[in-house]
Image (cartoon, rainbow, N blue to C red; front, side, top):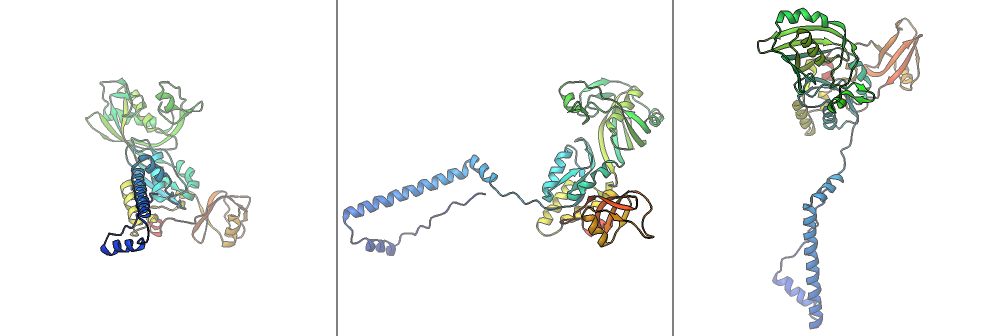
Length: 390
């Protein structure tokens, strides 16, 4: 924190003040008066040097950095819920999480599935207790709209990479549509060289940047739907794909281009669906920053940007319990399920009490066993955002 320099209050010389000074020392000798004057001059010189040093210190960049370092950090707070960021092109997923964590001053944050810097669209970011539900989002379906540029294959399978193969051939719409069934359903896919797959403890993209060629093994992925949306005469085609966890859309463009003999790479990519989060749930970064500024001035609430923690659990059955049973579950104790309203199924459920999320639990052998207990004290989604999805 920059500390203001203390200013001395200096009285302007007036006839009265000058006379008063003479009267105070009227009884001293000439030698005493000279020594007093010299002492006052030394004091004035010392004060001037102190002021000069203070000004130099304030202008010294090293001291400014020190003062900034000593500034008190903003207190982190408990924020619970999901923000589905409409990630802009050029931003990494890790940076996006850091930005939202700062905007909300949240204690915890994480994303539910990396989105490439060159891609835009839905990046669900979990805040606080929502981080406990991230696996349910990552295991959900994803939908992409992407554009393939024909005629070049690149080592990254997108526009950032180096051209490694070229062709003058351009596919027809009929040839593309005839090939798509081969890429629908459960298929084997080799991840791109520039991917986050670990090879002997190192990321594949780190090895690729060092010039190493890595043999990545094919992996099973599921493509639920793959359609040709547009086919222009500019050497590009637009597709939509709905796929499961672990699918690389860049690899789809690469493999389709190889089979067609024209080669291809992704030149535009947008994610439009992630698990339960749709395009209508997305919020652009500029809009989110504006909301934060309004909230800081008391004109709005950051809760309006949050979706409830349980939004990630849309595909899981809900089970309401009494307050007495909720107290047991909150302590980590199992609850016996009995009575005619007791569920006769088994598996994972999310538990609520008085309409509020309490825990993730497993039903088995007539018992409800808590696995993850939620503590939603703090900032949560506003009732308006909750009702939007009902």
